[in-house]
Amino acid sequence: MTIQTLPPAIPTLDLELALATRCGPGPRIVVGIDEVGRGALAGPVAVGACAIEVTGGRAAALPEGVRDSKALTARRRELLVEPIRTAARSTAVGWSEPAEIDELGIMRALTLAALRAIDALEVTADAIILDGSVDVLTPDLSRRAVPCPRVELRVKADRDCASTAAASILAKVARDQRMTELDALAPAYGWAANKGYGSAVHRRAIQDHGLTAHHRRSWNLGGQAPVLPGVLWDDQSSPQPGKERR
Image (tube, rainbow, N blue to C red; front, side):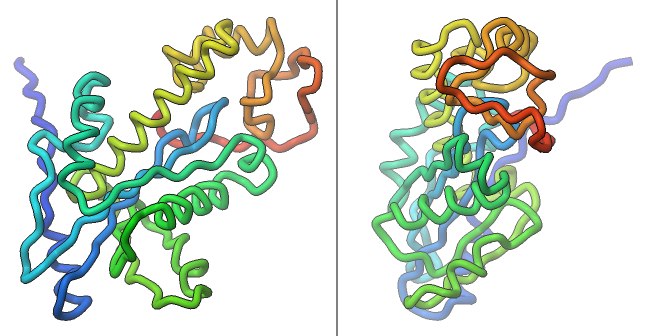
């Protein structure tokens, strides 16, 4: 019996163009949003934003090969970053650090990272495509003095929508680079390889060496661990389960 593997889905700009039409005539900015790092034990979460401009029902194509970041090799993702930045109207990555995640919870931290990415863009969004099923952006955006953009929820948007797939690549490459930099400061945890997720090497290092300032102490970190000097550890904190490995 031969099992055939389906090729990765090819994302399109169909939803982006439809949203621009719904926003009315004239040039419109549609922004794809996606996050990386939700389920890690250490390191920040990163949210990518990729803005495209739609004019007269047309938009500049994003680079060939843009896919959900999980469907690409690390090298392919890295090679796509500059072409994405060139083709898009504007791009940005927003961050939320481990201490913020512990204080506010993962969902609020992700929301803040997304808002920071949106604010870092050089353009104002008319519509936003959010990968997921919960609108965490409109409550904050609607309180601002400027008009609130339309937020479109789409499960698997990073698979189907080119702007969101591009955002996933930007966020993934940026976060991987950050974790490689942090690995140089604490090489025992293997962050250059595991990117802060719960690999056997990472969990064993937590047991052997304790926690660093880059760990999320509200996560399930494998039991009590010796604490490095100057690092807070609260063994009464409630573990927060991770999502997919991103």
